[in-house]
Image (tube, rainbow, N blue to C red; front, side, top):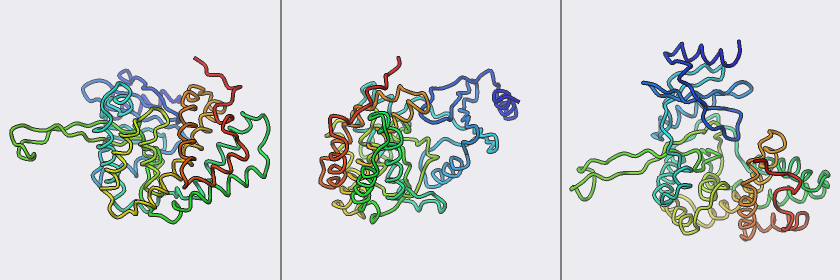
Length: 344
């Protein structure tokens, strides 16, 4: 039975016509989504093995239980990697921001959802997104993919050891800081705007109802246990789009105001460390996507990601990594490898 046949049988079993399914744009993962049109709109996640939909289903149940808006699960075949879920529409924050809607209210809603996710006890079986794991992933994309593409040879052992030691040093606030549920890709493309009206009785001025911004969270299957600063970095320092600095700082302060349990100084140091690690990993990950997965379009985000990395490296909390990279990768060499060409 082909994959298309398997999908057709699954949809028919649950009362949907395969002819009503149309593909949606695919992101960097190997999953794909089909929108089911008709009287009962839905989305089908097609995640063939070795993809595993069980983490998605488990985390969806957890987030729904703590009050975070996520798509309702309508049906699932775990073995086949098929999940039928609620269609929450097209109002991704990424789309809204890119078409010029004010970022402030959208980021406020995203920060509020993030605080809610982090306030609840996390599931017991989450994988760790700890300092050693973070360092290893950054080392992997940097030295296994970006370095050979940029310099045409393997990196010297001394370079690997130097950068590894620097990452370990800057991630100390992460290692010693608080732990919480971490989405790991909490950015505008994984958040959907939901709007609802508060009735007049629930607002200060009872003459009219008020439109309240709220977000739904998607693509959370990679969630882990880590430092709460990581998701805030993902949201406010988006590799795919520019967010004004004053808007970022406003959202940062809103987050800290909602988290009086956090030490602001220690949190800012962890935020800087997470930013440096994430931007280094992701800047080099664009190269991996281009070379391994034949998706060169992601190189478009390379210049912004390297710029965000250099901004993080300018902070005192990232000084050890800045020094190590300066010894091995001069600022002029930090960018997409010239030999990689963007395809139209």
